[in-house]
Image (cartoon, rainbow, N blue to C red):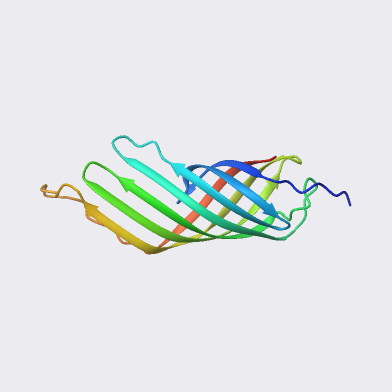
Length: 155
């Protein structure tokens, strides 16, 4: 068995729900990792931002390119803020996922994961009252699917 040096930092770029288009910085600790990310989505006349803090634990399997096991569980908190001219909507989610790293080389890989996100908090502020016949309203889904795909690089 070949041993590889433990990386100090992982950088990843990805897309997910609730992370949106994001950049993530992860700090490996043996088979665990602590990560923080910031994300956004380019939408006309709307400001979307996502901030996340996650803990990963790699628990099963093996890889030719890394001593870090490829299967992992993830738990995290995600703050999502959506603002338009008319509304400001803030959410806090508990994010639970299971996933797998697909190591392409010793330094590069793709991470795929899926699970659920549970709404902990929501604040809906109507900045400009709606006067039309259909204003949309707030859709309340306290549990939603959560998924992501990331391209990571081990520094």
